[in-house]
Image (cartoon, rainbow, N blue to C red; front, side, top):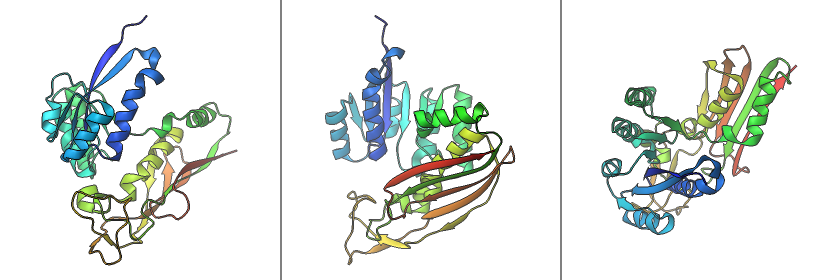
Length: 285
């Protein structure tokens, strides 16, 4: 029987993604049993007391704190999962790397190129491992598609199309959250769904060398929720006060790959129909 190697995990943020990562770490011994890895959920950091309590009860975290800095310094932490709102990604990730912790950061790593570059430099300087939540590339279907390209079974690649459509913001009554605020989130759908589209394109066909984009905001204002309650999945009322949406709802991005292949990448958070649809097409000779 192989020895299990414990890995201490700190999760920063217990929103939707923090919960998803916590569930995933609990399943690692069953799904990846041959690797001999035993994640231990050491500490959850979240400013909302009810979320901290739920994290301990649901996922079995050893500790719960309100300040992410305290979580990074918690004894026994090897990996820090950054699942906060976008505005905090860079600061938390840089602090974690500087403390010698491996970093798994949800996308987008930063709201700007400067923030993202600073995180990458901090990880390299510290000599730790850094990862980003590009999970789709590991799906068996995607791995198979990559092998078709790699083995030349599609001939010469001539064109690529991809889309990520979601309807999470399609209802005008969906409440205002940080996702719709440029200061808090940075980009809108370009920072939320398009990173998956761009990552998949480059995973399959190599680096993109030229890019342009058209964007549009279809729902300019949304109901403001009661502080600490509700998300963009929660519907407001017609007489609720509203706040301005300051980033984009959809984007169309024509690209040219370094190989010369042309492509078009689409993403929208206000499409009616697909709840969550991500697909791609590769055309060859």
